[in-house]
Structure formats: C-alpha cells, structure tokens
Length: 115
Image (cartoon, rainbow, N blue to C red; front, side):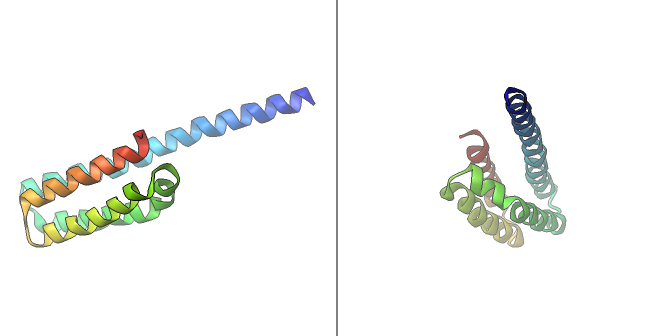
C-alpha cells in the first residue's frame, strides 16, 4: 500500500514537471511570433506582418484552453480582443498602433502565466 502511494506521488510530480516544460515551449512560440510581427512592421513588410498576425491568432486559438485554465477571463478574452485590433492596425498600416497592440497582448499573456 505504501509503495503504491510512493509510485503515484512520483508520477504526479513527473506530470507537473513535464507540464511546466510544455507551457514554456508554447510561451516561446507565442512570444516569438509577437517579436516577428514587430520586426516585420518596423521594416514595413505589411503583407508578411499580416500573415504572421493570422498565424499568431491560430496559435492563440489552438492554445486557448490553456489560457482559460491558467488565467482569468479578462486576460484571455482581452488577448482575443487585442488580436483583432492588431489585425486591423496592420491592415491600415498603423505602425504606432501595432506597437501598442503587441505590447498589450504581451502584457496580458504574461499576466496569465505569471499572475
């Protein structure tokens, strides 16, 4: 009986550790996409920035369940709203507004993981 509890405890600890590593990997993918959008906008490659923003939205949609579990409703719904604003800012080629939107998205994202 005691041995089975130890095995169960070791298994739970392993799942927690491995689960934390996958969150960091997803975190890097999301962050790198934001950084890439900012770089493309700085070099005024609006079409590529738009494509990357749509990919970022796809990443968000695929990982949304994690954000719902980890963060509060204001954060994960806020990301969704800001994502739409980001796409609109890119479509009208507003460099300053793109910077604002990426900063807001990054802040909301950090709040989910580090709140």
